[in-house]
Length: 177
Image 1 (cartoon, one colour):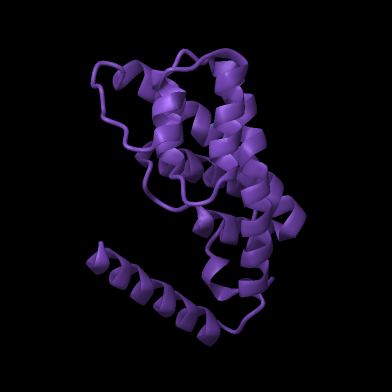
Image 2 (cartoon, helix red, strand yellow):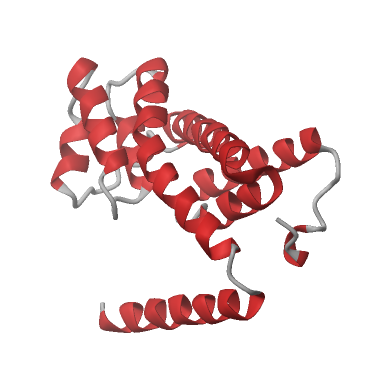
C-alpha cells in the first residue's frame, strides 16, 4: 500500500509494531475510542496478514493492561452496569465467565471497554480473561481487517467521502439518542 497518510510511520518495522501496540493499549485503557484506525494503519503498513497479527497483539495487550488497571484502580468505585450480560459477567467466575467474555467480545455493538470493566469487577482471573478476550476479538478483527483493506484500496477522495458519511451518521445518531 502506498498511501500518503501512513508514510510518516518509521521505516523500521519493530518501531512501527511498538507504536501500534502502544496506541492499542491507550485506546483500550480510555475505553471509548475506536481501534479501527489503528487496524487500518497496521494493514496499510504490514499488509493484511501482518497487520491483522499486529492488531491482534495490540488488542490483546490493550485488554490485559486495561483489565489490570481497572481491577486495581477502579475496583473501589462500583459502576452501575445496564446491560444484562455485563451484570451477569460481574457476578460470574470460572468457565461461565470465560464463555461470557467470549460471547461479549464476538457480539457486535458491545463496547470493549465495558466488557473489560465488567470482567475486572468479576471473580475472573487474568489468564482466563486474557485467553477469552483475545480469542473473542479475533472474529471481529478479521471482519474489520477485511473491511479496512477494501477501504484502503479506494482513492483518497472516496476515503474522505466515506469518513464524512460516517461522521454525519455519528452526529445523527448522537442527536437521536
